[in-house]
Length: 282
Image (spheres, rainbow, N blue to C red):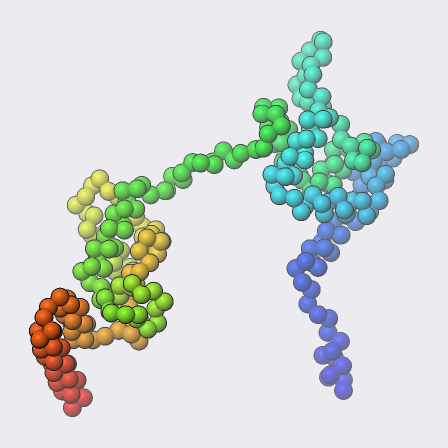
């Protein structure tokens, strides 16, 4: 009985959503306890005293559910309405001044940023973007740019062509569906090969071509999987001996030969294979 009671009294593990809710509640409680340090509230108090704990939680939950672009537009719309960007008569304003409001009540910047779940750096970035581009969505500077390590079209095309030609010379094409493989157009390379050995052959073939730089092994494997997924390495359990591979290749190549020739070829191949198997077993 004590052991059963000990097992049943264990608490169930918390889900990630429950942990996030508890962390969010602790964050709000810590902010309300420490305060924002301003004096914009009634009678010189801090501005967050005008808000209840429920209002703070709801505001943060609503903002955290928005996407990055949607939340940016919320902050940009607030800047568009409350940002003072006019210059004074005597001198030019060096930085813009903005008033922050939540439900019609003025709050400080720290409280506003906390209620919207954003940091100071992100707000400064949005403010600079609004000053330069107005009420428009932000676009990352690297959007549309290719990374420095991107492969050229010639290099990608050469990898695809080399893999196809290599499979044409070394792969085994079996009629029908091969057990263990979902595709019906697979080309199986012998199991003594690997993608690393094929990549070494590819790199050796490009030694004499200075205009094309060979890609690395990881990139070669990625392009292989993307462009030629039908070329596969044969698994050891489905691998055939050299005689069986040779016989299958001859049978496939004799598809257009007369029926008598194909029958004689099959009998000859079966006789040779059986003799070899009997010899090895004896």
